[in-house]
Image 1 (cartoon, rainbow, N blue to C red):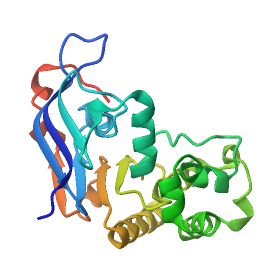
Image 2: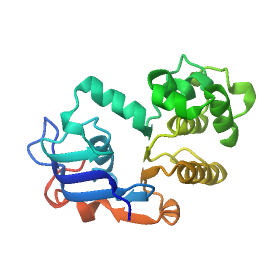
Image 3: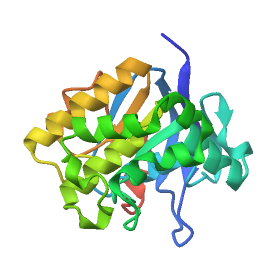
Image 4: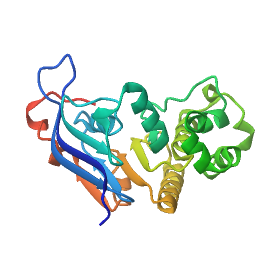
Length: 234
């Protein structure tokens, strides 16, 4: 097996207003090209775990290493740059910029990352292709994101995460607003793009239909020792 691209060792995390840990993970390793599905009930720390992996929330103890980089050694600015260079993130709340067009939202990572821009080769064509594959009508490409339905916004967020061939794709409940047809289309596109560029996928969801499409499935309760004695979190 190839070496881990994500390594968590003795991770403990709590929010400032809490007096107990919400994450207590002794060890988690994710390998290059692996498709990992993390399941579990609401409030068990799945989103918090993704925030640790992406460097958004640092743990108060333990080591987080992503792509051979110890995240705790990075400054805030370096962490932001590392994230945009190497991670394609599909946020639960989409985080689209409402005043930008669909194409501009998709291309956003390439504006801030020369690495992603180079890997996209042709940013304009790449963004158009991704939106088309996700069945966004061409007439909407130059409309502001605020004009879209919730399901359309989610598909734009997916295209933004995939552009520029990120090494790791992080997905936080990315199919919650998609109907059955678009959910299947999203999964087909996600896996075809990930396999083409040997990207690692870490995917969080309650949707058991999706779990069957992954080579590795774990329950958050099996790795998070804090679950039995802490309050629930996101």
